[in-house]
Length: 156
Image 1 (tube, helix red, strand yellow):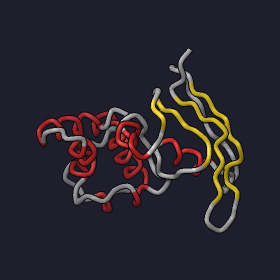
Image 2: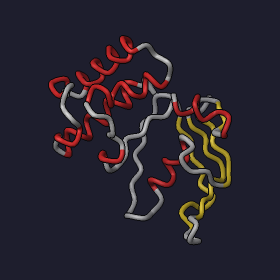
Image 3: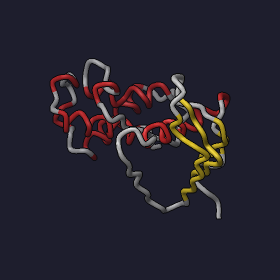
């Protein structure tokens, strides 16, 4: 059976010398759902940040049959969506609609198609009423839903 995600011997050390990951092996199969649990500072975000190339450690990571490497980042990132812990770091456009359409537009989608995708994604998270609102006017929960809509619009 082919893996959706295959991580082999992943290790990562921060610039200050802190060891965050130590020879991690991980497999995700099609149709499988997993959850990562652990204390603050245990490496959960560090691990996930490797799956779309935000961080690069030692070891090998394959996503949907593609090695996560400098020349494959665009293709890998089209497969891996990520909602940041702090939505304020993820939402940066003037309106909710523009924020959710940002990703599809950067994939080369037409403005009309990107707006259609963004509108669909906002409906999926029950935020279609906020299309013209500034993200910073939203509650923390609404910001999370808009950030999730941004990932859904990418169809990762």
